[in-house]
Image (tube, rainbow, N blue to C red):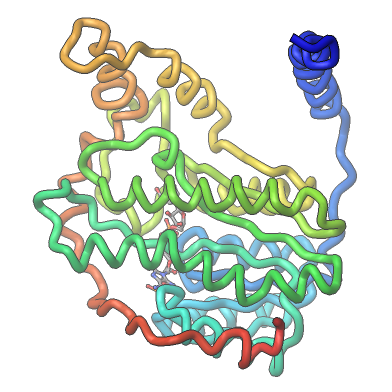
Length: 333
Ligand SMILES: NC(=O)c1ccc[n+]([C@@H]2O[C@H](COP(=O)([O-])OP(=O)(O)OC[C@H]3O[C@@H](n4cnc5c(N)ncnc54)[C@H](OP(=O)(O)O)[C@@H]3O)[C@@H](O)[C@H]2O)c1
């Protein structure tokens, strides 16, 4: 072996240790917080649930303008009115994030009517909570199109301008289920895992782009309509999060330019525990993995998914696979 590559091999663990210690020390220091007074923030699914609380929190913390996207006009209008009354300029637009033509079209409308979006919050998602064989094909497609692909279209629509301005932030409200899947919500977990990979890739890709960053939030079960009726197995140990707390911690993470946020932090420890469990199927060792993911702390969501299944969902048809006009319409390429 060449001397040079032997030295590199020796240096690798030393470098790794150096970066871990450095990052740990820096995380103890108070970080400089981003000022939101010049920020124009667009939140997908901003009419209700966590998205609504995010809109209110961004407004409370000084955002210049807030834009809400969603499919249900009533709740978008109500949220926009509440935010406007509190003194922050707020606009809403009907947009299905799964439909890329609609996303690109509405992105242009937003740019013309409101201005350049500097913080994009990808929050919209759906769940239908069934196993693979119990799910109809359209429901499986729907969750992938909305929860995973929707982010591709919104990010492609707004990121180029952020890069031009050298100023911007992409936020993703993901889920702890992206790191620890449960069997009864196979489509949701798959879409969230895809969305996490998307964010990891994007975050790394933007490291060399000055002024543009990312934040991915991975919350545990939160009290909103999405998992309404869900019973958690150890409510005292892992109480459901309040959407306003998720919103407040998210805005704090964006202001501190934090790349990943687990809510609550204990979930991070559980994910590490899950990874450490032996995973050979059909052996006694497997029982550890099964305990953590299905019967134990991370699987506690599984207990109550029956209630989620019975919730009626908004009808949806897959968007047509037509040629995109994005490049031409937005004049970004
Ligand atoms: N609740 C939880 O336990 C939990 C836990 C971890 C992570 N999360 C994540 O947090 C985010 C917000 O969830 P939530 O709990 O606030 O759920 P929610 O109350 O059901 O809200 C979902 C939002 O997404 C919007 N939406 C759904 N499909 C859309 C589409 N095709 N285009 C545009 N908007 C769409 C909905 O508005 P319209 O229906 O009007 O379009 C709604 O505003 C999601 O990404 C979810 O995965 C939730």
